[in-house]
Image (tube, rainbow, N blue to C red; front, side, top):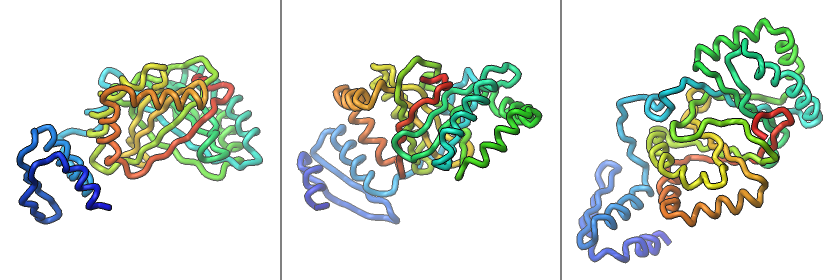
Length: 285
């Protein structure tokens, strides 16, 4: 099968010769084809092997995040005991909006959801800290003295099977997540990238995001700083699952979208999708 695939991919080339293999690197010399074809075929062939990671001279956070704002995001994943899900939701609806509305805390609840399809009996919360790490530290210290919040944590602990979180920055080319009216369903698509490929991912998506704005479906795009690293989260909103299907299919009608998929798929080690329903008090409805 591999022979047939290679034959199809190179059928438009007049001649290929002098294949050499040196220390895990394959060099290909191709004559008789336009430069654009040679580059595309060479790129496809290299994607079959381990990708070479280019050296970087600056941190991902400096190259990919928004410069004009110092926002830090925290995403929380709470796996709830099935019999406690309703009580957990009620507890969150009673406590979290008060923290969101209180200017004493430099943080905002961006959205809070239950997973509908994906991991079951799960809650996802997304917080924004305006001011970055100092704002996060300030909120943490102040909440230690908030008796209502400490009681909330105590009760919440009785209802959870496990929990985890990540600290995130937002990609500079995505819109900032803003409250929106519902009803909507939300999709959180999470990508574990190969180490060293975050910049490449950002470069492709900076051009590709325009293909996914026509129905206002793009909510936010983030990459991890603390927690599981080389993680990317894309948050989308749709009226319903049928709208999701038609919107995603429509992207393939735009010239250039297929190129984005072609070149970004090899960057991914693992990917996951959650369909989520907003809680009653979520700013993103």
